[in-house]
Length: 310
Ligand code: NAD
Ligand code: UDP
Ligand code: UDP
Image 1 (cartoon, rainbow, N blue to C red):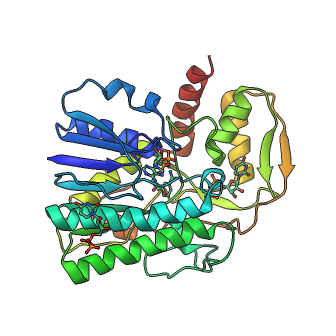
Image 2 (spheres, protein in one colour):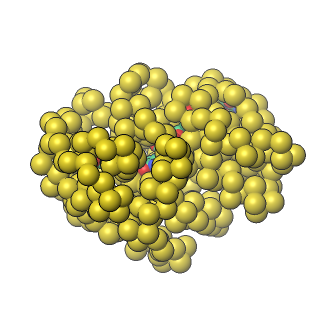
């Protein structure tokens, strides 16, 4: 198959390109290199089945493909708040353009949505039936509401135009090829620990997240893409093992054997207090379950950053 991956030079996108290339597909990797990097995909350039397209998904594009993974969108709060208008344009116009493309060439499209559509949740763990509690006017809204609008567009193109759409709600995922300056908690803590800097815990560190290793996530994304047409999602993907941010900091310090100390900093506005995926639906439909423990995934991610830093 010929497969388009928007945001293909990013963290998840580059792993997806690699896996689908290994599965013998033709890959169109599209990116505007806002947070993605050529380093992430350099090893695939030169492969005759890998094509790189520099393009901004807020603009239309005409290609012939069988499947589209729509991943283009900055994902770290630091990056998506840098130019919030551009962030929401990327989600909304990016969804419209990829859906227009999918409609024209009858391609199947998978939208990378997010646990952020649940906002600061009153339901724990979060299942797909929960509608969420998102602040529509806060500093995270450009991302959260953009992703919610993209989900709406997926469902409307499916109902109105018969487009073969899939929605996956991705929970916090980590691993190699997160940008050093990404700003998300796992990469921040590892880089701080390896360079002997203070570990910046926001708030008192009692807020929770559930961290999924990248290889497990990629397997889940591919399984969702290849479900029968009737299945539209949304489907949650993530690792239900839940940790406080303070526990994460302590784990990273122990695994890196670091002398770094914990520095408490103010909690950002609208930072969700807890987050844990209910993955019963993914287990039932996809027979999918994450295989990598936090400790094992952290070890592999630490090895990646250690090499990057030398
Ligand atoms: P990332 O920042 O590494 O990747 C995003 C990619 O999209 C980058 O390569 C960036 O350059 C590209 N991009 C941004 N705006 C673009 C535009 N206008 N046109 C073309 N390309 C553009 O982040 P990631 O973690 O790999 O996230 C990939 C997708 O998964 C995103 O849509 C994100 O919202 C979603 N997601 C990720 C997580 C996670 O924990 N990693 C969680 C939930 C959702
Ligand atoms: N589009 C695109 N590539 C295509 C087909 C459409 O980028 O191969 C864009 C097109 O520019 C339009 C959007 O997708 O702005 C939505 O397409 P749709 O056909 O739904 O809407 P219309 O063209 O009727 O506005
Ligand atoms: N966080 C932190 N220190 C950092 C970066 C993040 O304590 O250096 C916290 C952040 O406040 C949030 C959690 O870690 O509670 C996860 O943050 P991240 O930006 O990785 O993802 P998201 O908030 O989107 O889940």
